[in-house]
Image 1 (cartoon, rainbow, N blue to C red):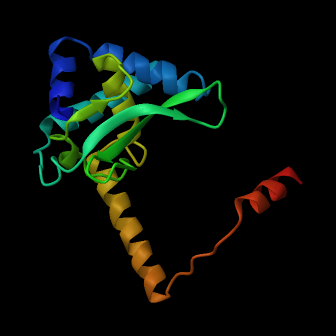
Image 2: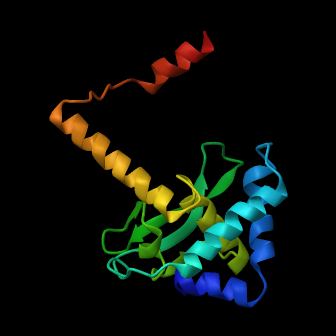
Length: 173
């Protein structure tokens, strides 16, 4: 099933409420985020509406799949769901959060976990909204990162390396 078909199936079966409940209960309640269920409904209903209205761009649809798998967070008792762009030929996963939404609509969804359609859509929606709740937010973030990359390459900006262990020590002091 493609991402677009997944959205349509959830909408056709009245499953959007279940999708929103999964997002709220998995991503907001455990982290004690100060956000209401109504706010989650408003944000993600808007996201789904935009995805339905977008004109799909299928230039990379066959090359990548939207993949869901368990990802260990370092704590052996806690597994989280990771959503990525999977390139079967390269056998490599890539971040999905800066992928233009219209390019994902025709991608096939590869569920390595066995989740129901509501949970699959919930995890994908959570991941693609990392940089904002509209496709233009994501597109703007891509432009900003490309611009920063160019400024670093030209020497206008500097990239500073640091050791994460040093950062941990500074925080603990």
